[in-house]
Figure (cartoon, rainbow, N blue to C red):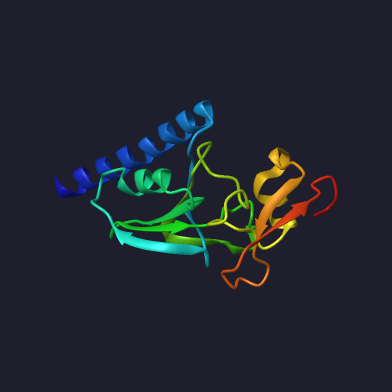
Length: 157
């Protein structure tokens, strides 16, 4: 009996992931990628209540949050200040996590002092076709001292 219940729970979990992914695609909203994480860009880690949207809600309320990793089974939330688009080299497999992008409510990288980019190229990678030429906050040395600089998004960055 316990084996059947575990199998049913597992099947239900995966079916819910499929429906969530379909809904996210239709709404152009938040999407998740199972067994993947963004490594090296976590600025806040905390324990959540299992089965609640607490991690997502805290990310949505924080302008600095670009995406998050969720550690399954122990309900740990890791808020990231980058996306997989900005740092594809840091997007790695991890069987105990899933990665979730913030979606359309995400503050563009470099648009506020609290979220400086390392370069104009990083902004262009992060924002894709939405990146426009203009002034952006940059901290190329990761010193914590960002400067406002002009980025020409018509070039390679």
